[in-house]
Image (cartoon, rainbow, N blue to C red; front, side):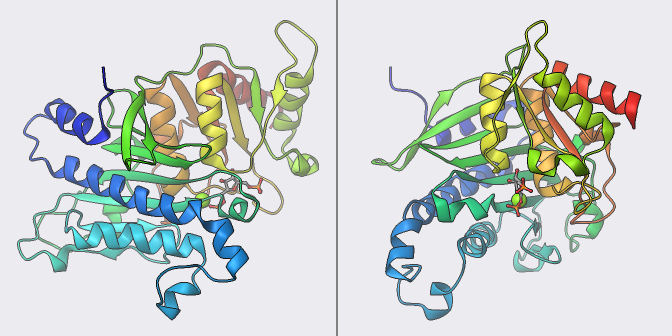
Length: 333
Ligand code: AHM
Ligand code: MG
């Protein structure tokens, strides 16, 4: 039997939301479309480097854009043009964008937060990158311009979240709070098909992913945890795998069983990753896949954000591994 397409799946699942008006389905479909366009550009990044241009038609201004800025523009345009959100915040933008004024009836309920191209330093060397998105229902009244508070909601309030991984194949993985499902793009047809239904972490993980080059700057608890992973005892040592592209590291760890760590360092005293664009959506996915995400002390989803570009230490993976990290932090830090 032919697997379901992402479009079919989104429509089929609409009933999971009582009183749904189809707005969220339309929004997910716009993200799907933007992902395909970004995928198209990511895939020819090497070619455009050789030619010394970005290869986007003949528009000079666009030709000079870096791919992450281009991805940012493509996602924002896709969301604004379809008038399906009332606000957008992006890792690439200083402030949030209010879309409300453009819709005459001003009835849109959702805000979207995106990291349009995460791990973009990997593009030059042909390593997987990703897009991360997070969707909330606005808290300010419909019909008024969005406010900062609409974006500064705890991750627990997310209505949907997901990522696109531009890897050996392109996948879109998302959750609406009813499990995690993964769809693989058939590039010949330009269609995402359900390939990974109901994704779950294995109960035991053996992979740890961390930039060990920063070891001397890590808190003692994390140093001790790394040594624990390397110890020859019980079912250890663990394997170390680090791509340096959160989406790819997270995706592998969810499928194979592992944990991703970005602790505080002297360069990044609050960790490097952004709570709103990277950690919250990944934490929602992790929890829906039977895993967990923490800043070492608190569940990421319970943190009340204070600013748009806030950073937090981030540990996510199988529940057992994240619990162990929290235990080490508790003892040593
Ligand atoms: P970016 O949003 O500027 O791309 O940074 C986020 C990326 C993550 O994808 C990745 O896990 C991390 O930064 C890697 O950082 P480092 O090079 O310090 O290990
Ligand atoms: Mg990023």
